Length: 490
Image 1 (cartoon, helix red, strand yellow):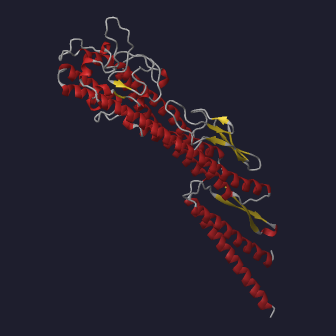
Image 2 (tube, one colour):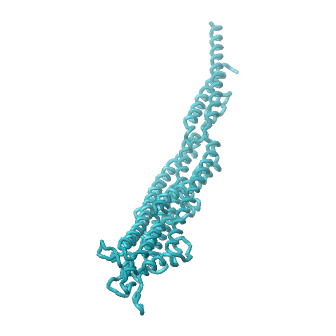
């Protein structure tokens, strides 16, 4: 081996070691970056034994990466649903605070029982009026809260869709760089691949995305249901965030690549969770509250007490915007819980009279047929007892609310609704916790396979240091030999 060749080998080794050290340093700097894969310097040996860097490759494990994406989407969907349902805790009610519809109905029954034992006492009748007003206002507040959370959920859905569009545009930019670089034979695309993987992981938090790689390192994205999300360029995502969310009506629809997104099918991620919350849980709860209101209006309605009854049943102690006519039987009236109220004819503050709670005639004070107390006795309590029994009387409720359609009383129905909501909250919270654990494990498995291990990098640095030292010793030896040759020629 000539001294010149030895010198060239040592010099190229130094240059290669420096490049490899830069790669290792970059790995160490990205040790805490969840999207960074470990980079490896690709070294080739040239003519005469010289070495040079030909590229930088990143670790790849597509199967673990796909699993991490699926787990992240499932976690995000569960988290979005759980967070929305937790905002409805006030509707389920604190047993000690007595704020749920079922508890407020119990309060009205208790006030009626007290009044039935002292029907002559205006204070007892005032207690009934106060309890009925609290019940109506409680339903109004529950309905308003549910509708407000629905609207907020829809707004958050719109923001998430805007974020998804922006991420897909970023994917388009970096994917173009990678595809172009691959076509030109560029082997230094590892950082761009990391960036693209990071963008895909962010997208998986919004929708359940599937990745398909083409032969030219081109990435195509699909939803879990097969709808194309990205292929060379982002597909159209149509959503009217400005459209109102109305009681009893599904929210604005979502179309991806022209295909309507079906509730709970293939969308996943945060967007899927928000859609489920808006058009399933919140939708059903709103209709359940409307059915409770309808049941209360029917339970407190007044009927014609004449011997030959001809007058229709009318709304009594509790009425609504469409009163005094009763709402249709067994069918949800959307928005009813938001308009239920105490009948002004029973409220002295609005020109009514408390004794009508005991005697009847709330629905139409001018029609004697609705008077239950024919003798005008102060001790009459028949109507009060009838109201107590009516609150427990069987009614048929609309199964479109998501609750069993088996008949029961309105208080029983309200209790079932509260139990349903608490079960939805409990289940969503458990699923959220479980999915968070699975997502962390899936991400950890992927990172342990392709991510940076500081011990490995430290060992690589030690090896590079030894290689560097060997190269410098070789150069020093060659230099000494050159000096000896020069001295010999003098």
